[in-house]
Image 1 (cartoon, rainbow, N blue to C red):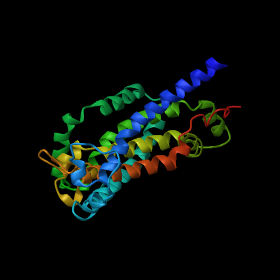
Image 2 (cartoon, rainbow, N blue to C red):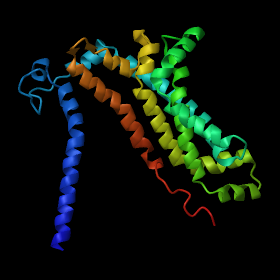
Image 3 (spheres, rainbow, N blue to C red):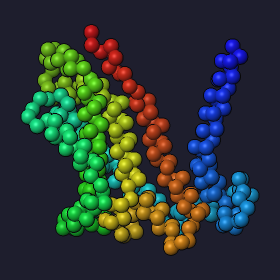
Image 4 (spheres, rainbow, N blue to C red):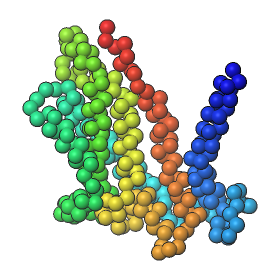
Length: 275
C-alpha cells in the first residue's frame, strides 16, 4: 500500500513539474506584456510585474494595427479551411471507399505533395498569383494555402474513412440509400471527430503560416498576424511588450476553437455500429 502511494506521489509530482515547465513560457509572455519597458530590460528579472500596465496592448491596437492583422488571418484561415475540408472529404471518400485504377498512386501522390518543401514552391506560386494579378493581397494567400491544407486534410481523412467498417455503408445501400446519401448521411456524420480535428489542424496551418505570407503580401492593410508580429522586430531591436502581447492575442482564437470543438474530437463513434 505504501509503495503504491509512493509511486502515485512520484508520478503526480513529476507531472506537476512537467506541467510547470510547459506553462512557464506562456506565463512569462503574459507577465511581460504587462510590464513597463524599464522592468522588461532590467538586469534583474521579475517574476511578477511591479505595476500592471496596458501600454503594450494599447500600442498593438492603436499604433501597430494588430486587429487588422487578426481580421485578415481569421478571414483567410476560415475560408481556406472550409474549402479544404469540403474538397478533402470528397477526395478522401473516393480514395478510401471506391475501387478504381490508380487509387494507390493518387493516395501516395497526395502524401508526397504535402511533404514537398515550401521553400521549393514559393517562387512558382508567387509567379502564379502575380500573373493572375492577386499578389500583395489576402486573395493570393487564399489561392496558395490550399496547396498546403488540401493534401494534409485529404491524407488525414483517408485514414479515418478507412477505419469505418464497409458493412455500415453496405447496410445503408441495402436499405435503399444511394452512394451520395450514404456518403452524406452515414460516412460523414460518423467521421465528425476526424473532420473536426482535421479542420482545426488545417486552420492552425493557415493561422501560423509565415513564408508564403512574407513573399506574397507586403501591403500593411493585408498583412496577417505572423507578419504583424515580425514587423515588431526592427533590426536587433525587439518591442518585447507588444510582441508578447501580440503573441497572447494571436493564440486566443486557436484556443477558443480547440475548446469549442474538443467534444467532437472523440474516437470510437462507430464502435458497436456493425450488428
